[in-house]
Length: 444
Image 1 (cartoon, one colour):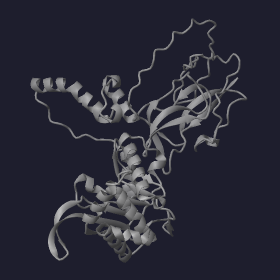
Image 2 (tube, one colour):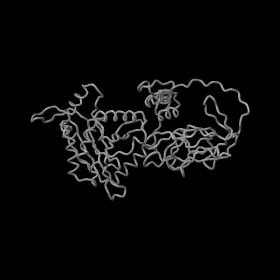
Image 3 (cartoon, one colour):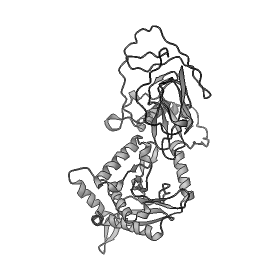
Image 4 (tube, helix red, strand yellow):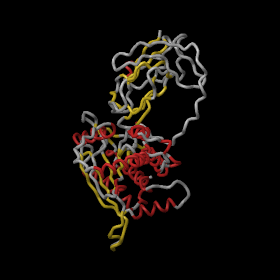
């Protein structure tokens, strides 16, 4: 007799308590293999596919698309062959242990006929609701006409699950779109343009036919990434006594150095990569700022490695990818990793591991065309360096008035880990490196 096993939603990342169902990848009654992805979920960190540690027949699914499932809550139940089922995690509240990738084979008479074409098969299973799953009904076809050869699949150039979901919800045929991304990649903006084009006509006609009634206030639910950001910023503002200091710096020599580096063969060096290098050197000089306060507030953790977070705009909004061990990377390597993570943020393909574990954040809000900011710290980090736009301004240089490329640097810090003298010393050192980048040679 088959044994029905329950697979619960595992912990998909540090601090996550649940995930929203984006898309089910299996149906009730479908035969699945061990470690086959069964559902696509959106967490506060990223969109991920969740594999099931059991192979057999899906007898129940829990949660509709758009519904949030708590970590540790039932996700699917699977009828597996008795004696051959892999043992899942106790309670299944954590990530499954390493499992064999071999497909579970049901017992003779279980009702599954192997398909030579590799297509997914279903057996007769009564769909189970959120309560206890219904018993498995075995129905074996005694004779089947040979299935026609499947048509060649249409390859749609789209990576982001969020783009696919948006297209499904709005009834947009992705195969009919021409992507504006690299190599024809379909982006969210392409889908939104298609939706706008589809509704433009009816909306215009309605506007002529009758006046538009007065609008009503709309309530937008906080969930997914927006909910996680709101909770984290609220906690940071509530728990961390933060202070901010700032200074204007002449970035003319830094920009000249960048042009000089990029005039030679090799990968191009971005301004962000140079600022990241300055941050790692400054943190080696002021290690108390690469730290965090313990949960109970009784101590300060000094981190041995600099895991550098940076703000990046993506399809899901503003995210903070993390460059691991930034202090051990060359300037070129920093630039390459920053570029890779920025592209992943743009396409919505960042993993939870790439969005967690930062120890210090570099926030380049100058890309939004602003000069200054007093940001809320990225809890539990103790410090954040902000960089405004680099713009030509009148500046006294060498005792004379000149037009120079100037930026404003701001530094927000947790006042529990240091006093104003340490924070001011860090910011002044960063500003000096921006104004005289040759100073970095003394530190390398």
